[in-house]
Length: 619
Image 1 (cartoon, rainbow, N blue to C red):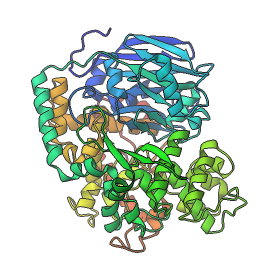
Image 2 (image 1 turned 180 degrees about the vertical axis):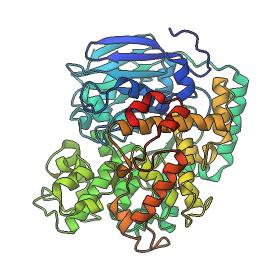
Image 3 (image 1 turned 135 degrees about the vertical axis):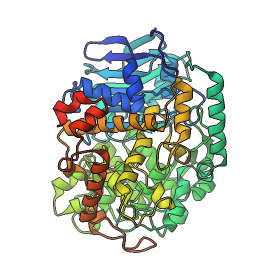
Image 4 (image 1 turned 90 degrees about the horizontal axis):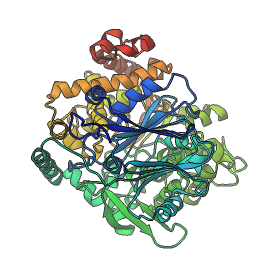
């Protein structure tokens, strides 16, 4: 067992599994790294920066997969169920963190580990079985080729316990498809190709059973903090809407506001919206509500389409499903979207990248760039639900046009040419989520400079969308974006759910976030102390990107957002011209103390943050 750790909320122990050498080692968590980087994403970035060389092949054995918890995991702090899986991404070619909820992260802590570091590559399919102190690398040949749900069923029978928690990949991960995801109980580590990294290591699953607990310095303080935060959740309308309808509660309001991306972002209003709202979903398919560990929001909707061609059972659909397969592809049947969600889980592919890639292909089809001979005979007009579902199958199996689309829109557009990159909705290779930035300059520069590219969890448009800051003013938006970055990265290191945004943010690190961290750890951070940690974490990740060769030139937006104003609706005329983006970048880099030419941290900034070890790589 780990030695006594000086901070509450931590086990004080990491588990390292070397699949090449079949080695299993338990090691102490560094106290200074815990204090400087907290846990989750921040700590994972520090570990990976230290342990993997620059420019490695993301699908080679040198890459490492780090599953990390945070100090609040496994406590009664609400919405603290999240966990992170981090690696060098085969999709974006830099550091990537994929966050998921459910129960797996807390269970890993209950088994006695703050995190799991997986290195090397097994010579045949394996899974890792963690049963408290007992850790084994087991043969998974009988699971290879199985979809995640079937593999999980087999594992539960094999181990003889229905309560174990499992992360597993599907066919896409086994085939190392660039945007393969990892299914983790009822949620998924969906983005950035973490499933491909797992598959490259011949690792089919991670299975965890823990019977321990988490120690805090003052249980009454944690209890009272949890009560106060739960009261905020219960009385904040934006959070309560999630309890009723999940994230699809956003659909109608976004359409009415003219910010529901539609038809591969050619417009931002969808006439078929009323059939795919959270309310329509609740009426037609939702059978129950599900929550992650210690969470009172209950945002996950258990949905069933009982029969017919779209028969399916899912935990969803979430807003991003409705965006990616609904408005982006102009499909207005919630049953179809449930089936699309189920197919993505079956193959183990990221539903956002899948849907946006199909939307790109539909635009190619309607512009005559693709014909039926290119699509295996599938009609890919916008609105063709059955054609969309057929293409998901093609992507999952990497057949025909699906082989091209499985590469993602950036690479697909390079291969096809014919100016199709102009409507490839991606940044740094990652397809865009369903949250616009064309009317929102702070969100625009946040997306452009974010380490993952098209991720709404590196920036949030909430402040500008809700009127907390004036969206029409450019000045000061670099600072707004940076402070939103800070609460998001600290949250991803504590591992609290961003859906508590009104309580954790939304403009900067909140007292609620600091109080939760202090209560669990026994620290007494003030705002400036918490902000300094977040700034250090953000700069650490930027150093990783800089070491991989990323510069200011990579901080871009899709061409459509810069060159094509929204054509209709309340946000008609909105866009972020190239010159506006460059102005925003200057302001953002200046606020951060980064070099204006490269867009990367300066020596002075790195020394100030205690990151002087990175100076030789970046400056």
